[in-house]
Length: 341
View 1 (cartoon, rainbow, N blue to C red):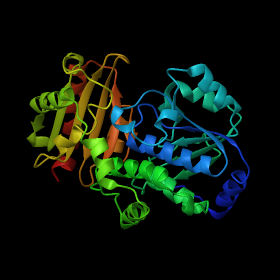
View 2: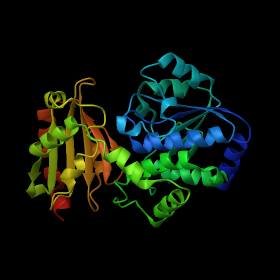
View 3: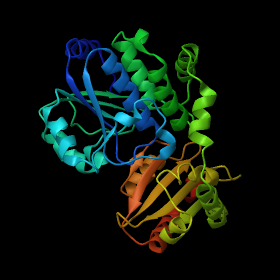
View 4: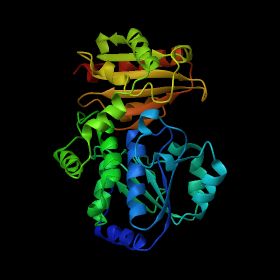
């Protein structure tokens, strides 16, 4: 953990005491926590007199596009020249929900080359050292919860309104799987209680995120469940989805979000994975989830060029789908005692 100490807080308060040109960047393929934290911080900075822009590396799921301020988000993939002009002329750059510049794709080099002061706010393990100010806490439920505490430290809690609250609630809800994951603490619930008390409508947000499935996504869910495999001897379940299956069901960004959790819900499973062919990037995209003490952050870092949290992480493979799954199942023999303990 690299928490903000008193000197850091005073420095940042001083930096933000006068109007600044600020760019806010989430990671590539942003999820609810990345977009929620970015837009929550965006509204706070705008309210306190700054010029702020959110620049996402690429597009994100439709079920997040109701969040207040979504229409202001710039997509680097769609307008890289204007985006990089903003990055190069920024006074401050906040990088949210990631801790290594490769996680923001082609935006990494422009950010590294910018003379702007860089501030990282993130809850993933093993942060890189690119930022001037680092607020890193792996015990936090989400980056959205960290943005709430950041605003608190900047003595701006009275600035949190419905727009900020809806953005932050969304990220906390999605990154905790509706408050089920182990890092959902009593403090997390106190933050949520505050947001509800100021008027955030929790039912509206839940419906907007989870109850807007397309017919194709539900058909894809059925396909995924049909492809589910259970390796009882290794307490492991996994799902594979091919490009052909994605295309057949009209795949849209975000349609595979959360599918890996179905494997983890199977009785007797300690490790779950999903392997998804990504034709555009010529890789197999992988998500891992685990229960108890099985560390999928280490597992992903050691074997699949990834990482994340102890019980939720991601990875990638440049092998084909069949060979990736073979590699995965072969590796499991090294973890047999740990998975069956």
